[in-house]
Structures are given as C-alpha cells and as structure tokens.
Image (cartoon, rainbow, N blue to C red):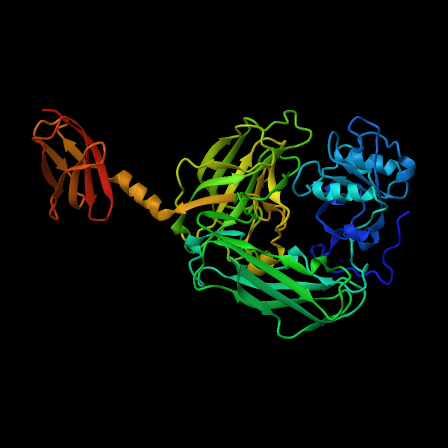
Length: 576
C-alpha cells in the first residue's frame, strides 16, 4: 500500500503553479536527485489522483513490468510478474500501445503508481489517456529515456526507491522556487536590432521563494548572476534576508539587468536560494533563466546551443477541433527595424492518426495583425475571443519527409514589413485534427505574464481566437527568422527603380534614360566584371550617352550609381 508521507503536517501552498510535483530518487545514493517528468492529470481525461495534492504522493520501490511479449517491459498486455509489482511502483517503456493501457495493466497487477520511460531521447512528453486512461486510479508519470535507463541499470544492483508527487511537507528543511515563479527575459531569443541598448532591452529580476518543508526557515536570500562568454556581468543578492514560515512564501525583487549595449550570444542567468538550514531537497534551490540576443531570431522556446533550433517535445492542440493555430505574440516600439522571413516549428501526429506520417502534410505559416486596442490583459478592452485579426502574410509549407519532432523551417514568399507598436501574431496552422505542434516544456512564463501583463501564446481553433491559449506555461516551439528591414526597404526601392538603355544592340552610341532618378556615375562592365567605360554624371541630368565605338562585340552590363548609394544594372549588347 502507499506509504504515509506527510510526517508532521500537510501544508497546501496557494496556486498549482507553486506546487512541486517531482520525481526524486531517494535511495541508493547513486540515484538521488530530481528527474524531469510529465504526469497524467484528471483534467486531461484520466481517472488518476491529482498529484498537486500532497496527500496523493507515493514513496516506494521501483519494479520493472514484464509482460512476456517479444518487446517485453512495454506493459501492453498483462504482467507476468504481477506478484512482484503488487504494492510497488511499476516502471516500463513507452511504445506499441496507448499510455492508458500500460497504466491500467500496471494497476491491475497491483502497482501503486506507474512510471513510463520515454522511448526516444529528449524530454518526457505529455500523455493522452487513450481508451483506458479514465479507468486508471494510480499516479502515472513519464521520465526521459536516459534517466529511465540509468534507473533500470541501478535496479540490477538492488532496490531503488523513488518519491513521486507534490513534495510540500515531505522534507523538514526545504526552501526553493519553481520555473513558474521566476522572472526571465520577456522572450528567450531577441533580435539585436530591437535590443541595442538599456532603453530598448532589459530583464526584470526576481522570484518567489517557497518554504515547502515543515520547519520554519530563517535568513532566506535570493541571488542572481548573469554570465556572458565566460565573464560575470551581473551579481546581485537581496540586501535583507527574510524569515519564511513553513508553508509560506516571499517575493524577492532584484535590480533590473541591463547593458549599455548588447553583444550577440547566450546570456546565462542563474537564480540561487539559500537559508540558514542545510536543505533536504536542494534541487530546486538553483534555477536557470537564460536568454539569447541573436542576429536574426525571435521566440519564447529555448534554443539548442549548437543548432539554434527550438527545443520542443511532443505536442498540444485543442480537443475536438479541426482548425488549430499555435501563435506567439509580438509587439515592439522598434518593430519596423526587422521583418519576418521564415518560421521554424515542430509537429507530430497523434497516436491514433489514420496516416501516422508527416510526409506531404501541409502547414500554413502566417503573420496576423492583432488589432484589439488594449493596454494590458487587465484592461476591459482585452477580450476573449480576440475581436480583430487581419492576416497580412501567409505561405503553405509541405513536410518533405516524416520528421516528427524535428524542427523545420518554412519561408514566406517575401519578408514582411512591420510597424512600430503594432501587435502581431506569428502562427503555424493545421487543418488536420491528428496533427500537434511542439512546445518547450523547459520554459514557463507565468510570473512574466503576471508582471508584464501582456498576451503571450494565443491559439485559434474551430471556436475562434483565444488570446490566452493553453496558458503561459505551455510555450510554443515557434521561432521567427528576421532580417534587417533596411535590406527589405532597399530591395523594394530597387524594384521600384526604372531606367532604360537603347538601342540594344548598339553599334556606336547608347542612350541611358535615368527616368527621374538622381545619378552621379555610370559604368560599362564586361561579363567578367571589368570596367570598360566609366563616366561621371552631373547633378540633375536626366539622360546621357555612352560611346561604344571601338568596343568589341558582345554582352555588357550598364551599372548606374544613384546618389542615394544604390545601384541599378541593365544588360546590353554591342554589335558593330
């Protein structure tokens, strides 16, 4: 049976975002530590207990589930070692059948909880209940493949005991914080063109610190550092330590991080929590809140350090909806400096999809003007559903192969000019009810949204546009590629330049008509790029002539230099 965990008292902290649902190795010493996890929730269609409630936590021994099949350890059929599983925590692998079926088979064997190990590298993913999840009444969690393999290996040496659930009240001395309650940069990656100095970019620093233990904590402090390219550029700690009673919390505000100028690269941000006591669960005493200043990227999902592609896992979509758009919000007073030219995202098909392959699957990328007029999300004019959306650019992308969970990049037909201060949504859209867009489980913007009070991740479904999406903790793996809008403007200006050279072919004299453009020089170049003729042009001259007598027959380029620094080229033929 489930062991009693709340030895002294049960403390319930307000709000689920403060709860610490953990998967913690307790013994032997080689497995001690915190493991990334996802967990089944009653709100997701499961019959499982609510792990946010500390009373539903479990502490017991892992036992590997064996089903006797060719694959074994998948839990898709009844356990052949049910006697060993009875009263213990079943651990098995993802694959071949629904999550709910695995968990129900573990439950039927007498297990008090079910741990599913992911069968691919990367973070654990969300788990749909499938056909049997509603009948599952034990906790169900997923951990990563590497972590799971390590635990399985250690189990060969002897019993492995783990804790699963909300740790509130479990450890005596236990202060910490959670990703949902730390301030971070407004987005993970920001284009350098809109972060040129402290007036354009800064990071408000601070965090809520919680006493999850059942002992009062004294002289609690919060510190934060920012390191860039091996150098420490920010190091702050709250001036006055705070005492935090068991079950209570305190907010620690630190000075804003800003720089006179920002170099492109990764800014490594670390928060640290300390108190007078030796912490019995120190794994949440230090949290990262890194951000990146980039030449060209914008997005809220974290980026792989080597590929600079978004880190994502699994996928989300509204239930019972065919249309689904996953979007990120953008507004900046200097938006006209940049122009989106592409969007990177990931997608997966649902387990029950009739066609499980992504090859040939269409996805629409778009830029939407978000025209509702409001100051922040507390403004009465901030409405749900969104009232005014105007699409200004879209392009259809087709998956070239089956690439589940692999970042792909879709290009707009041409970069999209933006306006200063205008709200936009950068979106990926599917009309296939079996397609899910990837999200980054490592990022959480709950405190950011409470602080900045701006929409973050709107979605569209068959019911219309929802500005709140799935919440500030469900972060779309949507990264936007930007170019310098100056290049866009030059390109548009260049396209608008009209000049003419005639006659062509020409035997002696060519006429060059500048069509009203102000020009200061022109050249005749051969096809190797060598200058054959160079000729200055006086200000205000509308037309000029090129004497090509004595020039060898062939194809040449007339290059015109405008006074605004641009150039125009035209191909001509000399034939005597």
